[in-house]
Length: 182
Image 1 (cartoon, rainbow, N blue to C red):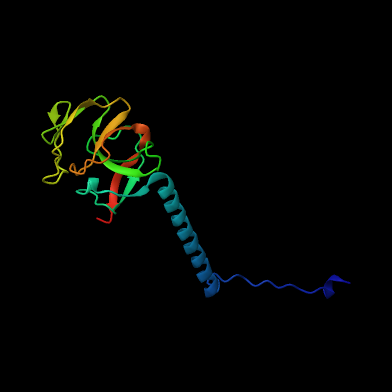
Image 2: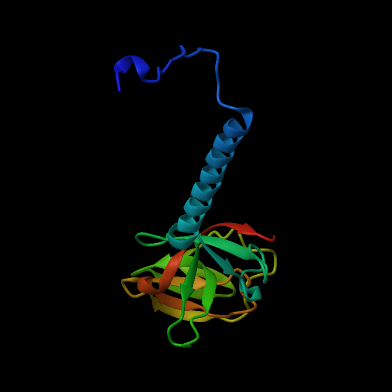
């Protein structure tokens, strides 16, 4: 076979205006959109797993801020929660793993007392603008010192008088940042 009998390939110049068919362009855009949605879902899943934890408030002890049935979103607290912050914690003594939501009123080595319905921290009446009228308790509590490595928590509804006391910092899951359902 001689070269002159070989088929001749012809190349045509590429037209700069020539584009992909429209259906291929749509598939490329659809693929990009699907990748974006999957990435957003993955980021949301990671955030809900490691950064934000939804917790349902089960009792009325925080009724003024977070009514029973409300869902609060907790972020991990690296360090000690401050006075006035609302913390979510577990009580290992009850063995159920139930999560409680209460306000931090004192930190380690503070003294706490309730006298005539008024909360005293280190002998000074605490300002509690988050309490509703009539939320003060009639029951007095003798002065107690919060152990180091603990915080002292109370519910905003002091008449309920539920789950109060010193909580070890290791029991605290985090601090409430925002809520849903109020």
